[in-house]
Image 1 (cartoon, rainbow, N blue to C red):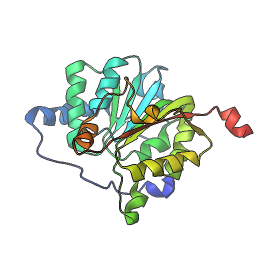
Image 2: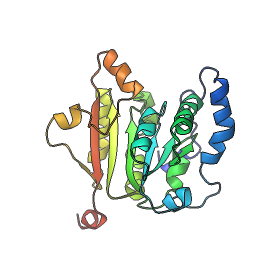
Image 3: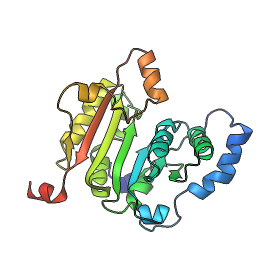
Image 4: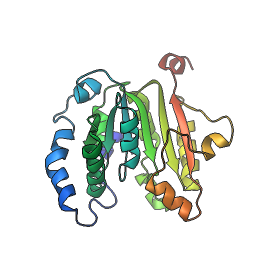
Length: 236
């Protein structure tokens, strides 16, 4: 499904879980509006989001926000954009933003597709897609976020040398990811030995989804790809 067609696609899965605490509801009501993306159809880049030219990292489907918050705490000179339609996860990230004064975070509490369409070419220095829903049934594969059109759009909005990080505990989805990325000449897999994809790098903190997978006896894989230089891609 092309991104143009996906624009009207509804978000699969829950939008809201248990009732928010009073504090987290306050954060959604009062803090979230100051962190959402600028309205309108204008192109999005670091200047539009943060007022300067800092590097921009994007996490798609940040869940409870613990990974994004960790990265934002440890890289305060980086601008972080997170997209997550589950409002309880958004509220969890907002709590971390308030507690740690993470002024380098912006949030899209909805589908990532409209954001990808607005991002300026070569505007992202890193992208994270960690433990997305694998939609294991064949009839649901069209719902997988990692697909050919999605990867093609990432190739447009990621800068030369930018890194794409993916993680999953579903081996069928891992093979799917490798197939989709392998079919796009704009990306190069960085692994040289099994440990490169079996072991999580030190600057990649554990998420609750990883802990849950390991508790259930599933071993996650950690895939890292680099956006090739445009000149080399064109020559190839």
